[in-house]
Length: 118
Image (cartoon, rainbow, N blue to C red; front, top):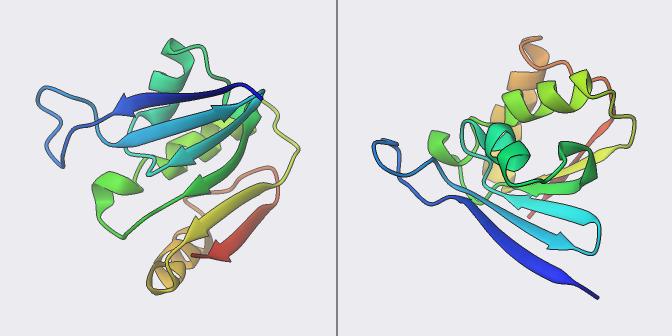
């Protein structure tokens, strides 16, 4: 097994110096994202990580700097013709917010999202 951690963003809500939070854990060819802050997909591309290889996204809490990159990430995955389902694991308290985001039509992924509680 080959595992690597990529710190794609380590900043806070105001990304003045460092990018917004996002950590990628790559195990062999699979990628797991933690807290996809805004612009995470651009930082993935710059780091040589394909959004199509993301198996699951984990959101630790409902602060915008930890999840507002999810819509852009899903859009990039859709534009890259992703077909595999994606697990999105969130705290129970955040599930309703995320479900509402999908209902607005603002986020329309072209693949199945499997919401899970953490």
